[in-house]
Amino acid sequence: MGFGLYIHIPFCRKICAYCDFYRGVYDEKKAEKYPHALGADAEDFVKKYSLTGEADTVYIGGGTPTVLPRGYLGAALTMIKKHIRIAEGAEFSCEGNPESFTDKKAEELKALGVNRVSLGVQSLSDKTLSALGRIHGAKEAKKAVGRAAGCGFRVSADIMLGVPYQTEADVREFAAVMRSLGAEHLSAYMLTISEGTPLADMVRRGEFSPDDDRSADLYSAFHDAAAQAGYARYEVSNWALPGRECRHNIKYWTGGDYAGLGAGAYSKVGGCRFHTAPDANAYVGGNIARITDEVMTEKQLAAEKAVFGLRTRLGVDKNTLSAAGIDLEKLLKTPYFTFDGNALHIKDEYLLTSDGIVIKYIL
Image (cartoon, rainbow, N blue to C red; front, top):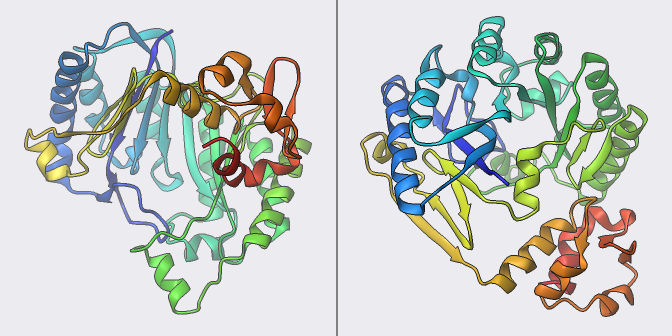
């Protein structure tokens, strides 16, 4: 089995009101140096972690990768490929925002071998998009999704749930419209209020009040609409047409290895989880600092695989449960779990609260 390759591009045209990922406003001087830094990062990574084999999934994320000028991603990939092999037929995803996913950008990504595009649509309500600090409108978002599908990309579209001004009609419309435009995959993320973001300031000022019950209703409405449109839920936050699941993300959920390149990128190799310091200035200056977050035992790895597996329709097999020291019979005495003869699952009606269930019964 190959490993996953994640490439982090920490540049955005504008910082959204809710975002707390490592990113910054686009800086031409840093961006010019970034491809070379990624090449140096790849070389250092392979030497330090004895990475062998091929990357059979590649994911360029951010930030907003599509904000980079033409040629920058190509230069970065050329340098990375000197040290890391990418398998023929690899799933090759690139994130983008609607306003920067132009015809020329689509043409560039296609030439680089990208075959899957993940677009941060977030909403089809202009009022909601404005509150989130997005710089695209609903019309622009629809054009971008249609453009990507028309160019032959496998298309994924993101929506946020529990955001300002959102209604159940909005989320139902989103699923139906994305299907009609050719999106094969949908990701729905519950809004998280992170300290230090403009949205957190809105909450403090009383301009927006998060409501967990309302968010749960929106999730249920979206799930029903996605199912009606032909999408099947394969992870708590992800739906896909048959055979169009994201292979790269499945690596995260099934305990696969992945190499993260770029300032702020995360990696897991064997039992070691680590990340690169989130400092673009230091990174482009040649200071690639890797910080070890955790070195896990076989039992801890199995427990982590169980935690993630319970978020997916794959569930957790008996061997993983045994390796993690999890008592299957004890779990089946609770109302939350079911066993189909091959794997343990959280019942569908409890999936949205799976994090709390896992904390209580697994961790």
